[in-house]
Length: 401
Ligand SMILES: Cc1ncc(COP(=O)(O)O)c(C=O)c1O
Image (cartoon, rainbow, N blue to C red; front, side):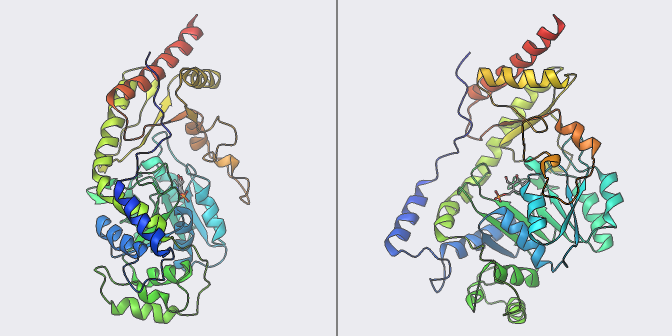
């Protein structure tokens, strides 16, 4: 069998980033608010908002920071309850705790999407909702928005992994009141670290901008959607001047210089990622031991990894499968079985109390995660699929014997 590919390296950063970084090295102008206008972070915000189709964007230090600022910008009172899916990364309940709120966990089904019956039953007890489109899997946004809108409950979309995903043709991250994205390395756009939030709400963006660290009158460098002076935004900034704490979660010009030349690559990355994912999914789904859940009908995904459930394997066999794949060179993470996994809700022991969520637990005990960077070739995808299939056959063959 051919050598398995390295799935940890990202794509090279486009050469244009080097020129932009060289210019910054020459000028030393790394702070977003030094230049009177057109700082790389400001340009990134305008380009990102235009790309996604929203009015405003605020670039910050991480998606976690974006989630935290979103909750703060919503003006939630201390101890407000925030509904989040129980299948997400530990950074999400952490951002809720950081914002002095209380995470309420909602069940997630075998298809990695929010269990709508559990969601509806818990909605009347919360003041806000964060929808994590975990690993880019989109929950039923029509049902979620209808339920939340009917109650006036604000929705924050955690689109950390969802840049490029659409729902009924609309960009993920633009359906809720705020959308938050990550530029950490294992995402569609890689700056090592970084995040951004988008919204159409002038009051919300003004609050978020000030709290992100636009001290004194630096907010004047945040403009309307086309870089113009926007009276509603200026009024909101004036209203919140000196009224809010400054958490200093700003993005540096260096990160923006790395991100901006990757935005024109996004459409190609999404196309390649989806093609790669669907190819491997088809190969795995042809085996009785694998189930790669289908997307919901309105959803067009932008994956850079694949998740699948193992079918008919005991916990012991699932561990044996993961070890066999690992020995052949493909790292499989079983969310519920790898020690101290940050996506297994029972490991979020910093929470005041962790409920029992049988559906989510059952899913996590059989759900596997394999990285599939968009740059992989068909041959490399075949090596990965061959190894996964062989590991399952080997494990189940031994069991039958
Ligand atoms: C679903 C989800 N939300 C939020 C985050 C936090 O992103 P960041 O590392 O940019 O803070 C992650 C990180 O991978 C994530 O997987």
